[in-house]
Length: 267
Image (cartoon, rainbow, N blue to C red; front, side):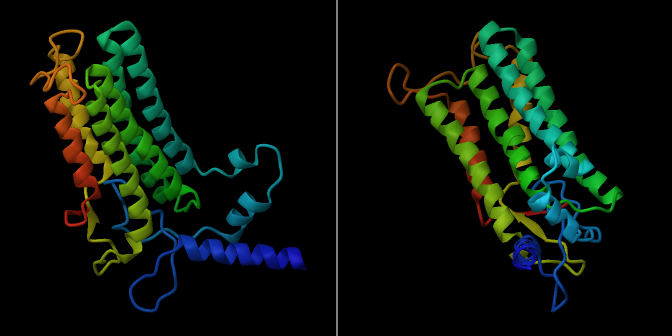
């Protein structure tokens, strides 16, 4: 009896922490709250997970229980994370070999991650099934694919000074902070009549794709470290404060992601 009571308490706590209030005094409804710019919350919310879904993650002691309990949408979200990691590996191969096709492959896998980031929500809605891991997996995968991977490409093509790396670190940490803030504050963002959040606070992390597109253009034109060099050259060369002006783009992107005054309308 005591064990059943503890299980019930855990379920109640999980449902309470993972749910959002609708307008008025209506009951809480759990949504798959995507942290990406492709949020599909404009449609009717998905039904909340059954209690058995929570029990499966807390009480299931079978072999491979985690894999057994994954939803199809979760697997697609994991493919987003895989794409980001493979992009990073391609950057490492580029720095080892200098072959530009590796960094081009890195750009491709970030674009592939964007596809999976959009498609996981589509699958969840087509199956009309929520995931208790959905938002957390989505945020972590986005951090890898649209935060760490673009910074890795930037380092690979030439932003390698100490100041450059600090700026890249700043951008990644801003993306991390932006995702965490979204998960905490999404329930408090003003809603329209359909219960859809009206806007994002700050740039969503997938907007780093404009930086990826810029770097892909530079690589295509041979404007990277081992060929013609980065545009605008280097400032304060041979000093501790040496940096490439191009790194300012990552600084501005980081500031835009953590901004509270920038309101980006949802699609």
